[in-house]
Length: 421
Image 1 (cartoon, helix red, strand yellow):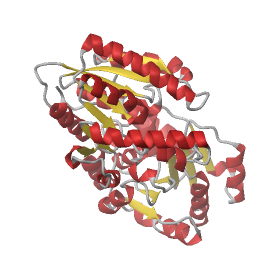
Image 2 (spheres, one colour):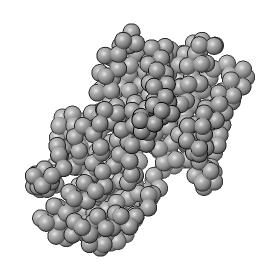
Image 3 (cartoon, one colour):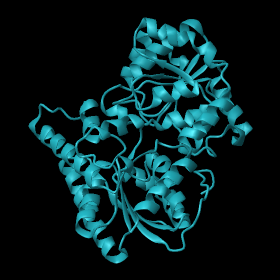
Image 4 (cartoon, helix red, strand yellow):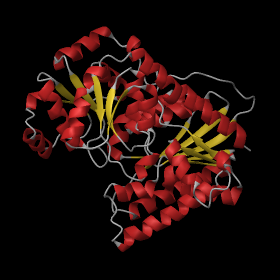
């Protein structure tokens, strides 16, 4: 599918090997299109035949299925979508895990998989069982400390006996995944170092760091349509646009970003805050903005598909994202970071999230705010003049070394070639 993502090829083994890729996230979700399909498409060009199980939300698959079907057909990927269930909590997840298990076992009997690649913890319940029962090499693609994320994000309260039981169960499974898998994929070096301290980690070389990558051909200023870019600029009409891209809840500190923007407005009165999200802009957001002397016409809310995100980022002068710093976020790699860097966009980000601090420091591509108070907001604002002078090409070159999709596919390919039976 032209314009969704593009792939570079490496080499092609003579024999196609069967891979079962299991994701509890849906391919029709934005994450599925940016962080699942591009990898699978790239690897499918390198001698691996993919069967892909995912759990799809009813509203998303109703709209997005034709696009995903076309991509899978074009790349000979056997996509087996299952229905995702949200309610009741926990029991719906158990139901989905059982559906995944049943389908995975049926498919293995037909296809005799050489690898089972599991994205995150729920999928890995099935992957570990396939490993133990049939000896299939198992990749634990952990994506973060899942149970800790639920607690840190306020979704699970461990004072509730049921949530505490589930937390302890998943942490014990996490340790087993790390111990018995043939490869562990960590999004960050910080997450890898945490796992290396665990007593279950017996082979440090099996942990591979592959951050959330970006398709640098899609997020490339030189390939954007100038007419479309100018049309978007007219709708925003600002000499200073601060951009935030993504979800508004749980981890993302919208109130603090609004506070930061109020300080930016004090120095740049004509500045606009561009928020590109599929989430609803709630009344509480409006009230908090007005509390910080931000008027309605100073905030622009847009919704965009994946192939439009590069345009919105390209009309931004400085990117912005504040994410709650906690234990689980040390293993997190924000997709938006690589996308901003690929477009040469300088940014202001919060400290304590995965490897972001280190990457920004080494690449000299932005400013890391260390706290959320008047002094730190003012320091970040004062740094904007410096950020505007940074070389976009230098930022993009740094992105290529760290976040490129081609590099990620090559690392995955090395893992596949090493462990496949």
